[in-house]
Structure formats: structure tokens, C-alpha cells
Image 1 (cartoon, rainbow, N blue to C red):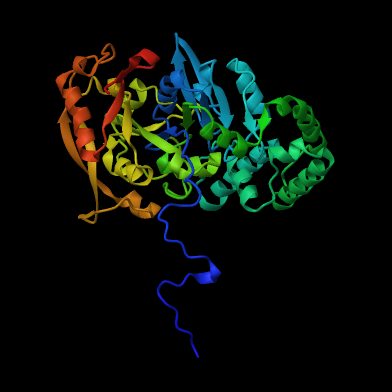
Image 2 (cartoon, rainbow, N blue to C red):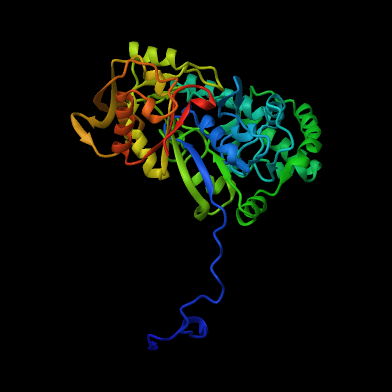
Length: 450
């Protein structure tokens, strides 16, 4: 027989209260982080935007990826290349924080820090560690893909994919393991190495040599290591701080939302900020999307607006489109607003930075991709399937060029009228304001609109 319960009854024997206020005050949200993310396939110029924002920052963070990223910043005619450290570290007053979602190759980290004169910065406690044999495995896997399927993924061969795979398989090793009992770490290292050797019989691993190098890094790393979750919580809930997050790679390279399988191995959209830094979404503030004034992609994979003609060659040459990490030439094409709108759906950009507008200075007319069709029918969404994306036809709007130099402009009003119209067209189509416009390589070449 069932018992009836009055509508005022409280389950689990809890005392009923008529108060409308919680017994404990709601937690204070604390400081919010400003996030800079790529909105295309990477190489949009995120480093330059981060460099600007880092002038007023207290902490600059990397939340995902590894040294497969490449950010170039030019300050006072000096060019800095970053792969693992956040590029905002150029500001000597900031603390650089590498989040738990990042995979760290220790030799690369120290080499980069010394090259760019970055000392006394912070690594966290939990990130997976990239070993030399991960990079070797990355190369073997690419070779196998080429032999078996006739094409590879075009990875940077930095070992990023194998490390994230080991993390998901729960066989990886982390910085905290290296900092703890080195004997236990060594045993687990040997097990992991033997697993890879059984999978790839041609793989040669100098186990003793690599362990010896790692032992030497323990004392070097120890002063920089903090527990990442406690560090970020203190930064968010302590005194007011400007906290800047530099995304690596870009939306269309995200492991879940990108042009799979030709993607990276981490989440480079806004969700990766929370999981990579160990912070709640309520602390995400401004989310700035960085968009190149045209589109580029390095490596293979679908690229609907790619131009196999003089336009593609001109963009590649004028834009000096060569990968910072790999040295590979980037493929080039018209600006594709379909994929940027898709990136905005995922990330919720609050404003955009439009970079390399000056590369378009010599074009009499400029095309912008505004929709896709398949078999003559418009499709309302960005295709998830790679084969479908390969087959889409792009519908373009054609805008007049400006045939004049924009590189000396320092305000929006100094831009040619048609260049201004190009910017406004992008804003209106996406429904997101453009906050910065890049017209050159230097810090001074970023025009701020508001």
C-alpha cells in the first residue's frame, strides 16, 4: 500500500523552512579570466593579441596542447617564437601558468625559456609529460598511416597525440609522478616504453639515457611546480588580478568539434579553458576570437575556400604563410564566414580580432564565403563528416578591394573606405563586433576600435 504525502512534506526527514534566503551566502564568483582563441585552423595571430592584453595582465595561462603550437610576436623589431610557453610571458611582470591540460616536453620547455629569457615562471603539478619516445612513436604512426591508407594526418611529430592517447588509456606519466618517488616513476616509465616497443617493433628507446636526463630535470623543475588547482583557485578568489588565457591551435582543430580526423588531440575551444586550468565556467569573462582576414590551413584536410590559383599564391607569398612549428607552407583561401560562425556557436565570442588585413591591400576585389551547398542545395550547418565537407561548394559574396596601403593606419578612420566596409560586413554577418584590426607584424600595427 502506498503512503500519501502532503505537498509541504520535506523528503529525507529534512526540517522545513519558510526562509527564501540560503543558510550560507552564495560563493563570490571572484576574478574572471579573459580568453583568446583561434577561430579558424590556427595561425590567426593569437600571439599578437595576447601580447597586447598581457601588458596589463598579472597571469598569462596556457590551458591545452603542447609544443605543437606556434605563436610569433614582434616587439621593438625583435621576433619571439613560442611553442609551449604563453607568448604573454614577454611582459616581465607577469607570471606564466601552464595548466593541467597541457602536455609538457621538459627539454623543449627549458630550451624555449632560455631562448626567450623567461625565468622564474610556474609549471603546474599534474600535466602529462612528453618523452622523446612519444615523438618517435608520433613519426612511426604517421609513416604507418601513409603506408596503409595512402595519407597521413600531417601531425607536427612532437609526440602530442601519443601522450594524450596514453592519458586516456591511463598509462601516461605526469609531472607530479616525476616529482615524487623517482624509483616508482622509473618502473612505470619502463613499462610504458615496453608497451610502445611491443606495438612498434622497429622503435628504439634508450631507456637508461632518457631516465638519466629526466632525473636531471627534477631539481630544475621543482622550484617552478605548484598544485595547479589550488594555484588557480587562489588567483581567482584572492585580490583582484587580470588573468589572461592563451588558447593554442584553433576551433576547427578541436578534437571534438574540429574537422576530424585532421585535428589536434586536445580541446582548443572555450570548454578546454575550464578543464585545462581546473576552473569553473562562471569565471570565464571576455572570449576573444582571432580571425585572419583570409583563411589558411597547414597540413591536409578539407578546406572549402582554398584557392588553387594566383590568389592562393599571392596570399601565401604576401602573408609569408609558413608554419612557425613545422616550417610547412600554409594553404590559403578566401575568408570563410561559415566556419567562423560555427566557431562562434561553440565559443560564444564577445569580440573579434581581425588580423593581417594589410595582406589584402593589392586585391581589386575580395570574395567572402557566406554559405555552403551540396548537390545544388544549401546546407544550414557546418558538416561534421570530412567527406561531405570535401564536397561542398562555397557561395561567395564579392566585395570591392581598396588598392591602397593600410599598414600605416593606426585608427579605424584612417583605413580606406572599402577596408572599413569589409570589416563592417564581417561584423554584421557574424553578429560579433571587431575590437582589433591587424595591419602589420608589430605591436603598434594593431588598431583598437573600442
